[in-house]
Image (cartoon, rainbow, N blue to C red; front, side, top):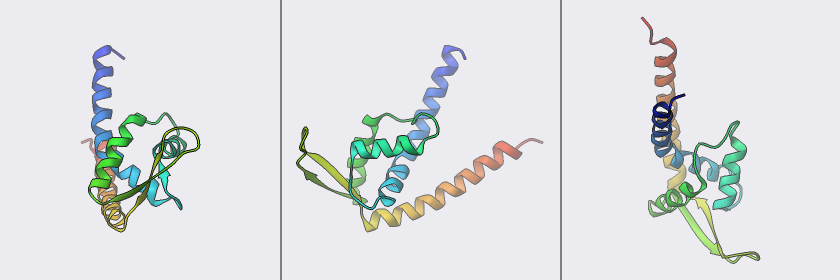
Length: 122
C-alpha cells in the first residue's frame, strides 16, 4: 500500500470511528451489570475485537464526557487503592432509549452498505 493510500484508509477509519464510538460505548455499558471506569471499558473493547481495536483509548474519555453531558450516562468518582480516583460510568434510562434507536439506525445503515457493496454491480 502506498503512503497516500494508507493516509486515505486512516482518514476513512477516523471518520467511521467518529460515528460509531458512542454507539459502542453505550452498548458496552448497557451490557454490563456494574459501573465501569475508562480502562475497564477499553479492555472490554479489546475483548470484543477479533483484530486490533480501531480506536485509541484516549478517544474514549471525551466521548464518555459528551454522553454524560447529554444525560445518556451518569458517573461517580470513587477513590482508588492504587493511583488517582476513578470515574465509574453507568448507562441511564435515556441512554438505553437512544441506544435502541441507534441500533435500529445502525442495522439499516449496515444493510444498505452491505447490499450496495455486495450487489451494487450491473
